[in-house]
Each structure stands twice: as C-alpha cells, then as structure tokens.
Image (cartoon, rainbow, N blue to C red):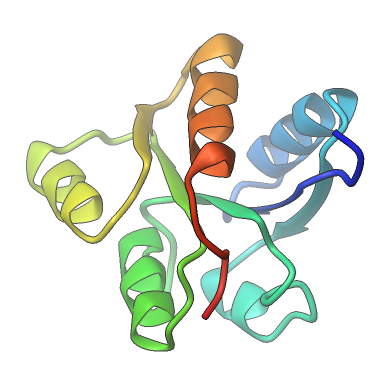
Length: 128
C-alpha cells in the first residue's frame, strides 16, 4: 500500500474500539475511532474514510441506520458490521442496504481482515 487506507471504527464500547484500532494500525491502516454514529458524521474524516467498521447496536443511531443515512447522502463508503447480538433479520437488512460483511463478535482476525480486503478492493469511488 503506498497510501494507507483510512478505516473508521464506530463502536460504543471503548475496548472494542481500542482492540480494532490496534489490530488495523499494526497492519498499516490509518484508523480513526468514534464512540457513536453522530460523532463520525460530524467528523473531518467522513469524506476521507475508505471503509467503515461499525457496531450494529449503538444508542441514538444504529450502524445500519448510519449506513442507510450515508447512502441517502450519496456516500458509497463500504461498510463492515460487527455485533455481539447476531440476528438474521438485522443481518439481511444490513446486507440489503449494501454492507460488505456482517461479523458476530467475537470474530477472528483473519475474518475481519478478509472483509476489509474485500471492502477496499470494491470498484468505484468511496464517495460521490
């Protein structure tokens, strides 16, 4: 990678944010972490993000609602979801909205890295 991809991690659990940040940074990614969808939407990194890794269940705005909101704004940024409470209906809704992967916590490092590789290899611009 000549220019590191920017990955935004959005999770209301600080330990998940820290662990995901450390893993991805050790692999050469530039990582920004956010405690909520609203924090991410108000950030300077919104338009520079190459991929979003988000928790499904967060207060105020869920990860899936964030994805749908961003699509409504014209952002095509790839999304990877992670959740401690996998639910088939939520999974189907997330994938239908355009999510690349839906991972149940705890997930393996190779599973996350494979999803990220897939997300970053998708053709097209990250934003419109």
